[in-house]
Length: 396
Image (cartoon, rainbow, N blue to C red; front, side, top):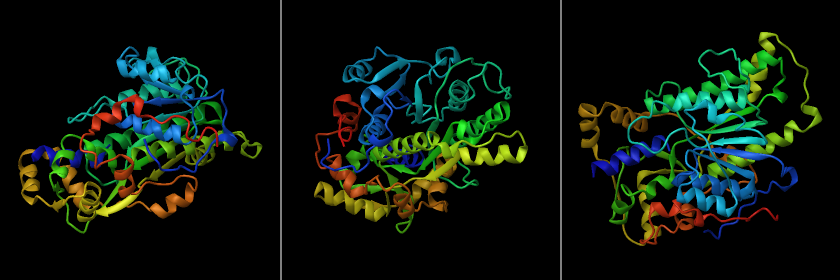
């Protein structure tokens, strides 16, 4: 039981369908430009890749970074047609020219799915940032490694976490620190090259709360199928949920829009080295978006589960668990308190207006799309490259 509650909390901080997707990038699609995809070769990462496929990117245009191209799943992805390349984010020498011929970069994660906080995430982010943003052997930030490299990346989209500045959670702070790495690099490049915002890569942070896919994991799904959904928050407190597949679609839409804007003559601005102009340009190059597809209370989530699996599911708040975490598990207690008190919100209707071609997935739709009611399916099914649906929108 403790594992179930712990996993739901940690997931909240993260991390074949008949449904039609309206977006198509055919109008702005450039077959000569790839998209660099980082940290997305795991189980939830493949769901993000499915989202990129949904908006029209064919497999050969997606350049997937992995530390071992010889793993069976990597070989399968290569056979499907993905461009699978080997690189180690902890070794800057392997990142030379990693962004060559890439118009965009989607970063799903800088760490594998671990219970303990991976403190090397920021270091990996700095290495990648030097390779695709700064692209010079010498840079202004002594904290960043010196990499002489070629990169054509125009847009970086990062999967982050939604929270106000006073959240007090180490996991979230690490993600926000990574955002700062990219934002600082953009300012450094503007200073160095006296560039306008149209000449410097755009950085967008997609801040999510709870990935719907996380509820499929072995610490949560069996308990829910058995009729219990423990969540240590008040029954009227809203939980923001998003499908990782939608994250991939939104990332793809942002990269397509950025490529269109940067190719427009109207975007060619005059360069300047004044501090005020640089800061203004930097603000135009960096964006933060809170992302969600649905907003439900614990009881409403339990009701959706019950409807999908055709059996009763009871939500309950294990208050004793919060007390135990406060005494013995300080990091976990931070996360519980964040869930219970966070005032951060996501305006789903505004998000739909901003991306009219993307159909955001409700939780009920997600359960239907992923066949939650099929008790033989497991979370590991998402990790199978054969589950990817290729070519939905490429012919639109």
